[in-house]
Amino acid sequence: MTVPDDVEALLAEHTDEVAALTRRARAVLLDGHPKLRERVRRGWHSINYAHPHAGFVCALFPLAGHVQLVFERGVLLPDPERRLVGTGRTVRSLELHDAADADPDVLLEFLDQAIALGRRPARA
Image (cartoon, rainbow, N blue to C red; front, side, top):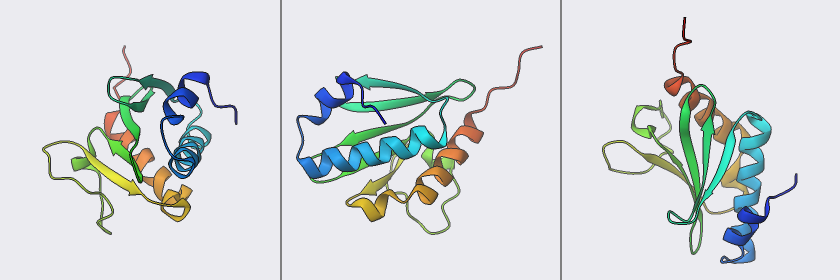
């Protein structure tokens, strides 16, 4: 999968490990939902993802030693295994420390749920 220049520019500010983990998570998200629109937000230091029918659903935040996959409405996502972290009123995130944490089944399960939560009703 080709990585756009703006994504690479953001990842150039991180270790090879964090950059590789971000690329892996990014590929999982985009392969699982090819209709996602990707946008680098330099001010937030993130790669944001919007779905055509659900709007903004999540963002990847590469950090010093790991990557966060933040879900905009994460507090509403079913999480029986308590994988999501956060204490705010709305967002929750998956903490990705290595390739095993970027399990496609887990990432896509949460992404599917986030998209389903945000689906907008079709206009008549």
